[in-house]
Length: 228
Image 1 (cartoon, helix red, strand yellow):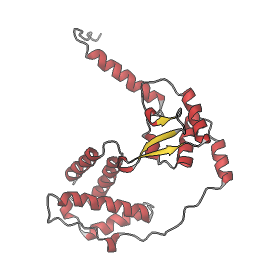
Image 2 (tube, rainbow, N blue to C red):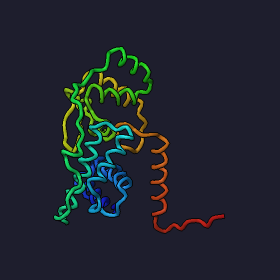
Image 3 (cartoon, rainbow, N blue to C red):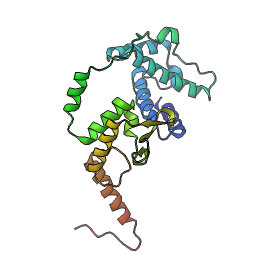
Image 4 (cartoon, one colour):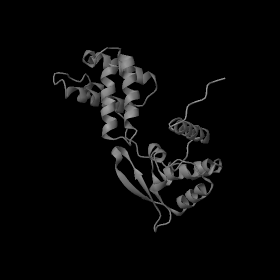
């Protein structure tokens, strides 16, 4: 089944190369294939879906997460059906989708928030978490921010965010968010990386060293020295 999954994942990546959706789909569908253990999607039955759900429940996943996984598998079958109209999805909503409780969001108590931020002494992490708390950004949205997305010198200060399906929106920065970002940018290392929040500096150094080595190898008229 993996040879059917990969074209679907490639299609998702072509549709929206900036989003991380295709990685999630690849992971979830690969796990699906390992659980049902059929060589082709057409061989999967409704009973295999029952088994798949039972495994997810045993893994401790919540109903909302399981339903999301089922929706991804359904999307995979919808993609395959474009080439094989006779292929039917083994997932049936009334049989397989789980009921999930509807609860209102509960705010984090202020003392808990104060203790949480008191424990953060890294300026990057403090700015990162404030964007998620005050700006409502998702983890993937924060990870995808670029330096050019930040507008601290305009009035009012703002941030350009690319959400699901690369939908663009603007987040206006509160004084607390602006102060945290300015403090982080003041100590942000000057490296060849456009990401607003830098990953581990050792990885950046390795990537820049590798790029430098490759550029040296491509110089014309030079031959590598013989190993001693």
